[in-house]
Length: 177
Image 1 (cartoon, one colour):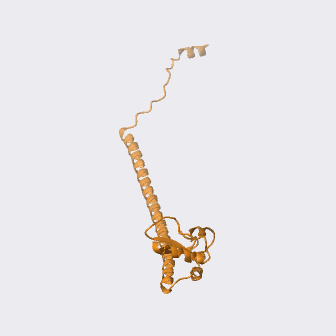
Image 2 (cartoon, rainbow, N blue to C red; image 1 turned 135 degrees about the vertical axis):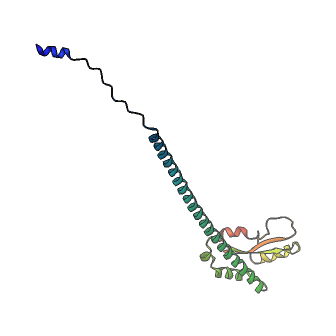
Image 3 (cartoon, rainbow, N blue to C red; image 1 turned 180 degrees about the vertical axis):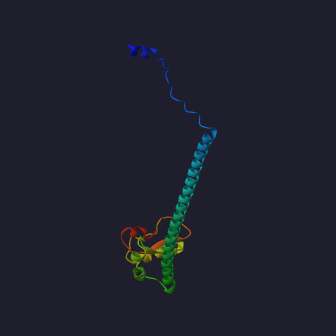
């Protein structure tokens, strides 16, 4: 029985609340903010550096491609000019260039291999209005009875493509234009 009395005589125990965490000192809070601010600043700096590096590389690549395209166009234009100059030289060196001579000249140029994409090499003649009837008669006498200068109508000076090689397919539509 003595045991029962001991239990009854024990003092009641108050509930224990968990220990409260003390507020961090101000300097620890400031240190956390400083670390966060430095992290954001470093991230922003690295981002701006990478962005400027990528933009500069893209600008250099764009400039290089533009230079390549510009050079390709200039080279192609030089090749076209060389053909035109050689055609002009042929006309200057001859009293009268015939259709067969023009064909031989254009075949010798080997345009299909050297400058793919050129549809043809032609020669257009300037015709004063007074010479138009004689011009029409001469070309028709070469075997082109339907030949006419296009577009129709009166003008101060006429021009007509009379030689064009290859003289086939869609190039035929330009004959007389």
